[in-house]
Image (cartoon, rainbow, N blue to C red; front, side, top):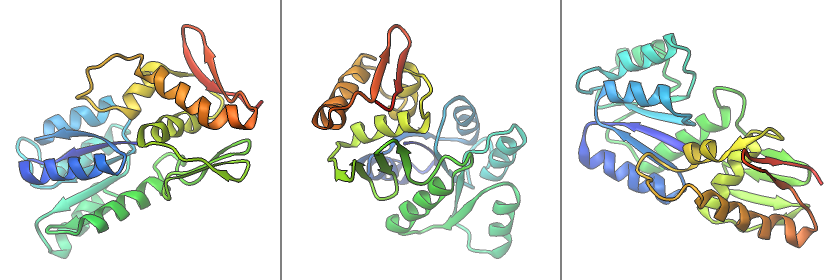
Length: 223
C-alpha cells in the first residue's frame, strides 16, 4: 500500500517514513502543501497523512482543493493544536480523521488501517479471489484455508493484483502502487515478485492464478 506523508518537520517526517516502511507501506514524502497537493493528484495513494501547519499551502487548503478536484483518498490530518474548532475545520474541509501532536505511533497506524479498511472507493476490507484470501488489516494470506507466508513486498504486489480483480494490471501500475518515488531500479523487479508469488500461491496448490499478458502486464485467473 502506498502512503503520502505531507509534513515539513524533517525529524517527524523521516520517523514516520521509517516506521511505515518497516510496516510494509511504500511512503512518499512532501515537504510543503503545494508539493503534497501535486503528488496527491498524480499517484494512487491508499491514504494521506497531512499536517495542517505547512509552508506555501496549509493542510486545510490542500484538503479542500483535493476534495474539490475529486480526489477521494482518505486523509488523516495532523495538528499541533488541540482546539475543537481546529478539529471541526479539519473535518469540514474534507479530512476523514484527525490526530493531535504529540501522538502515539501505534494510534496513528491504527487510524490509518481503519481509514484504509473503510476506503474511499469501497476497496478496503478482506480481499478474495476464488479460494485466495488476503486480509490487509491483519497482514494475513490464505489459500484454500492454508496460511501462506509472504514478504512485505510480495504481500503488496498480491494486494495490488487482488484490488483489480480479474482486470489487467500493467507493470507500471504495480510499480506506482507498491514502490515509492525514490525507487530508481529495474522495473523488471515486478517479475521477480510475481515469480515468487507463483511459487508460494500456485505451485503448492496446483493452480495457475497469476497470468502474464504478454507485453501488457498481469491479471488474476481462477483456474
